[in-house]
Length: 202
Image 1 (cartoon, helix red, strand yellow):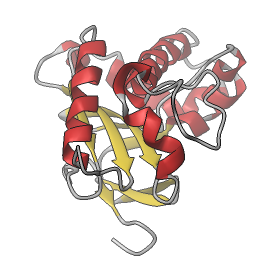
Image 2: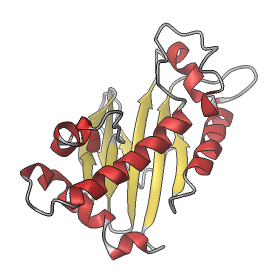
Image 3: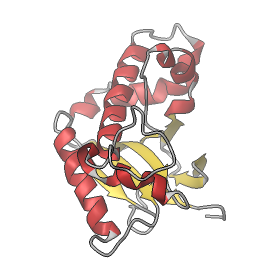
Image 4: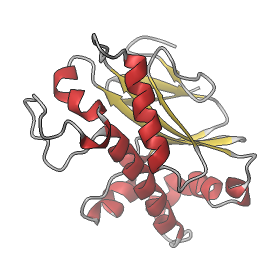
């Protein structure tokens, strides 16, 4: 199992998969990041039967500042009671959908260099997976996953209802890609794609 950390959480990915922390790659930081407004998902993991684009939002302890982001389509952006500037930030359904689109655009850009840039070495296997004939095959599953940790349940809506609402909104926004969209947390995620170790051990 390959262990990678994001937002104070440890994620374990199955042996045999290729996994990159995309927004930490040299290509993202040194090249794609020169594009104003560039953004990318946290993890891309590719296995024999599936490729997943995973965004992690660990809001534990900061739910008050994040609550407006769980309301789809920026519905609460301008009425949010928060101590941080919402600025040009979006609700999570919009943000994650945009990050997936820009990640795929970045990978398309990376593929135009062939093997001419050493900074692409860490993306080589991901590029091969995304631009293979298998990627267009229905047998190769494509997943878009928002991992949302935080105590967002309330009197009117449970966290499950909140995640389902975000997932429906993301599904609408991701119709341009043949993929399965999931919004999960530490109690609902699929252990086939990754495992959560928190601050302890797997």
